[in-house]
Picture 1 (cartoon, rainbow, N blue to C red):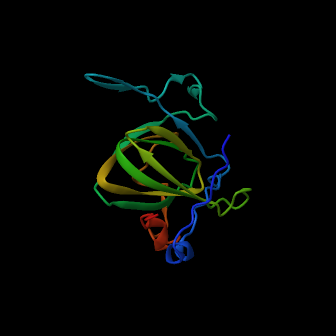
Picture 2: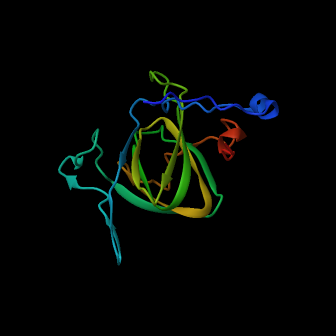
Picture 3: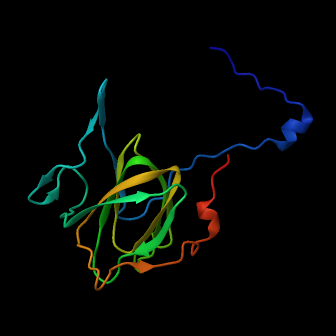
Amino acid sequence: MTTPHKIELAPAFAESLSFESYPPAPQIDGVWTHGLKKNRSENGAFMEYARLGEDGFQNLPGNLQPRQISVSWAAPGRINAFHIHVKEEQNEIWCVIQGQLMIWLIDCRQNSPTLGIRRKLVLSGEQPTLVYIPSGVAHGYQATEQGATLLYTMDSQFNIVEPNEGRLSWDYFGTEVWELDRG
């Protein structure tokens, strides 16, 4: 086995060099993700979004009884943030099926062990993933330059007369959350 050798850089480069760190993503109590399998063939693809049984979603953490399934189309660059369900419990499962969304989740629940924790996720139709968002967790997204299609399931139906979507300004948690990571 050979010993790795340190690479000597010219001083101007060595002084300017920094290194990335890759800490684990912050976890929010009750939030989970589940990757889906896209089965491809020469003439297209097929993906199973969910299997439903008497208790709701099967083979996933928690228990969500679907009451409404909706689709949202986000124009390129669109920011849709932040909303929280607080009038009554409304939990959601999101899945991007086309394009890409940068999603922010912030735990705003008073007695949560992860109160104030922020978590950024990138969901893509190329590698579909379910994300479960419990009530009291602020959530919002920004579409990339290609836009996105979001399929989401809720365990409470939308009430247009008495909406259960408390809103916080898109920049409530700072404008920097929406800035592109330029590495």
